[in-house]
Amino acid sequence: MKIQFLINSLTSGGAERVATTIFNELSKSNKYKIYFYTLEKDKFYDLNGKIYYKALSNFTLKTNNLIKILSLPFLFLKYLRETKKNNPDLLISFLELSNFVSILVAKILKKSVIISIRTNPLIMYPNDSIYGKIHNFLIKILYPMADKVVVVSEEIKNILIENYNISKEKIKTIYNPHYISKYQELSKEPLEQKYQNIFKNSFVFINIGRLTEAKGQWFLIRSFKEVVEKYPNAKLIILGEGELKEKLQDLINKLNLQNNVHLLGMQKNPFKFLKHSNCFVFPSLWEGLPNTVIEALSLNIPIISADCKTGPREILCPELNIDNNIDYPYFGKYGILTKPFPRMFIWEDLDEKPLIEEEKILFDLMIKMIEDENLKTRYSNGLERAKDFDIEKIIKEWEKLLGGTL
Image (tube, rainbow, N blue to C red; front, side):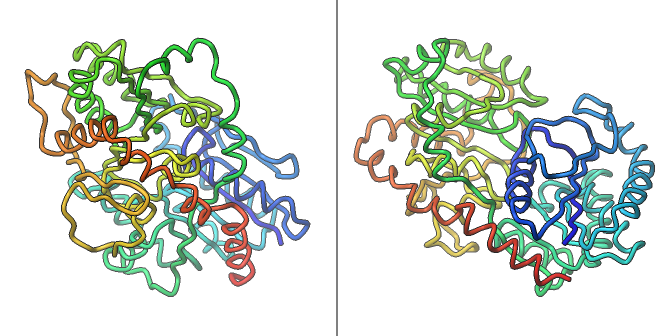
């Protein structure tokens, strides 16, 4: 079977890493010949040498968004030509722009197409902006044309059925794949000397994610200020890059947390940082199925997560129904859910703007995690749950889907 795949880029990110993982695994089988395309040329993740790879433009993360949007017709025509040349049996795509292009090309050339939605479109594309309205319009028009729609959580499946008129028969939930045993091996790699001092005589909280609005790290930093007031040796490390890096660093400076909060950028091996940390904290405003939560589980690190839509509840508290109303904090089977944060920026220090309720709940949980050894022990059991997302299990689900699509 010849499969042709399209994604926006291969920059650091959950969808990008999942894509390379899936297709690197599929390429090991002689059943599949894989063509892999990106709309932009940025490339952080590596592909197996058996996979044909090509970027459709020279655009990068730094390219102006207006230029990217105006160039979409050009990229569409280029991808159409590539598809005619390759004559694949099946088109697959991840992320909205790539999904739009892939569906249109598939319909023109009468090809089967699978698209994948990696996050909650209702929050990602609010209707109070032109950008959001256009995306929601295109999702409602184009996504029902796909042969199959893969989502990463049951909650996203329900959102698509209820809000975007996509038939439930077309939607398949397949969780993100993870190399659980590999994560454990990578965690044994020693930390570089320049990072070791961060962990000496300190209780270390860790967050991993792009420095973007969706990840909500400013709430975490503001909450952590109160933790430091009580425990001056406590540390917070954040791994990731993004457009909010300068603002987050300014907030750290404003709160006088330069010695306690460390923005360490993108790390090829985040697992050695997770291994040495005491608690993973996840303040995201919205998600699909957060990979970093599963990574933390695989190393048995206690987790405090915002109960955002979608993903954390489904991963950490499988005993809960997706729609259950709960009181916060909720002490679940594999992690603690804290009250979800509002979609708003707060860059003021605590004198200018005191902590909001959601921040107070979070800092109180962080204090409890430092003080209560039994709580820490209770939530050091994540590997049991992480195995449900192991690569072998997930790849079998993808192969079953591919076999039934044509």
